[in-house]
Amino acid sequence: MAKIIAIANQKGGVGKTTTSVNLAASLAVAERRTLLVDCDPQGNATSGLGLYRDQIQKDLYQLLINETQPADTVYNTMLNHLNIIPATRELIGAEVELQVIEKRQKVLREVLSSVVSQYDYIIMDCPPSLGLLTVNALTAARTVIIPLQCEYYAMEGLSQLLRTIQLVKRSLNPNLGIEGILLTMFDSRNNLCHQVVGEVRTHFKGRVFQTIVPRNVRLSESPSHGKPVLLYDIGSKGARAYLELAKEVIKRELSRNG
Image (cartoon, rainbow, N blue to C red; front, side):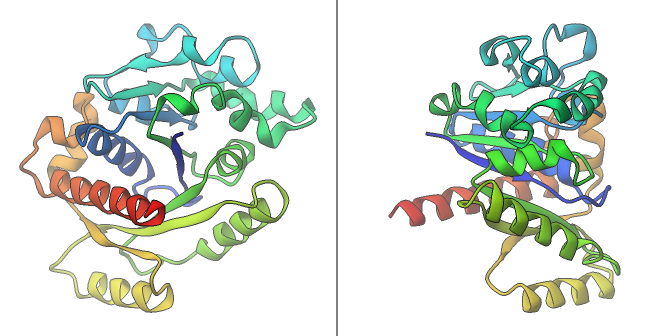
């Protein structure tokens, strides 16, 4: 049975898609059967794994509005143990069309139920908002990873996300937990970055990953080549960071299942 992890933060530009793509790829390299679900209409996780609009027959939109089956929306990637359910701009319409459905917050959980036994991990890339697509992902997830940029306004808006997580936990998904906060875009030359790391670790003691993702040119370049960073430059600091993050995620799961 797959562990379902949502990558969420309503603030844009904090590394959600970068984390979704590269954590999923790193778990796959560790020979964990992994499915990446692109829940963002921008479709950046989809193109980041080398899948483009003209290659996609059916995507998450058709799946959510019950026009197709999960198996028809799952695509292979360059990595043997990694599949993806892609997103296109059509997914924007799902926010509107789902409004008329009675259990609209639970649609994603229901459609994933038929494939959950086929994977070890399902990673969901959420859009930069707290709309219906993100709520669906949180309702389907077991845990949430929150990417947090190492900058002055790092924790701005975080309280709103935490409130949303608590609301979903209370009313839709009582088993939802926080996997961890992931510090991203760290610049070791910047004193402010070090201060942010210290503050976040103090304020959220025990809930912050040891792995810190650095600012890294190769990490920024890899999406334009349609590859996760470990296939673009496995020796880069960005690739090493996400491989370490995957190790942390796996280790936590093993210790929980003890």
